[in-house]
Length: 194
Ligand code: GRF
Image (cartoon, rainbow, N blue to C red; front, side, top):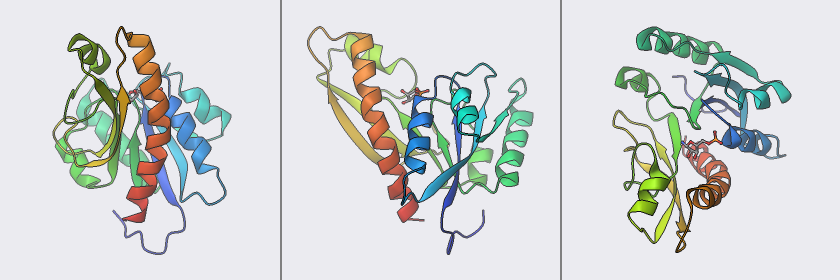
């Protein structure tokens, strides 16, 4: 990784697998007057990810990575990140696990958003597990990515109340809304510490 001193805007790659509402929201923030970052690359492992439409709409370079073989996929991924001179990688609903070897190459420069109050509810199906356990609160977390799943240092978190008789749909919608305000804040925090 190159030194970031003197760079006016940070080049971000956003990695997605699905809807890409966080991607869309980060794009919106990157277009604000005093934004400290620009999104110059969108990567998906899934050719039919809906989020790719946002890249198209905003004319952002997009790449599909074939994940049939993990090692080759990560080689391609790394190559794309280097080619586009990416400084920071934002995972936003990216459903593949990055190897520790890959993470080492972008050490401290990969962040992720997770829909729970980490360290609680790592992994998948967070909202359903939260509801099953009658939790009073859930939320979302932006954290650095390290070699353990959803276990890197927490950057920012937002608590969301779980209502009595809450539904998966209702809870996930309310948390996603908070994700959209949390991710840009966390990203700016990371950038100011670079
Ligand atoms: C979000 O809930 C995020 O926390 C999780 O995957 C979901 C992605 O949503 N990692 P979207 O694709 O950004 O709409």
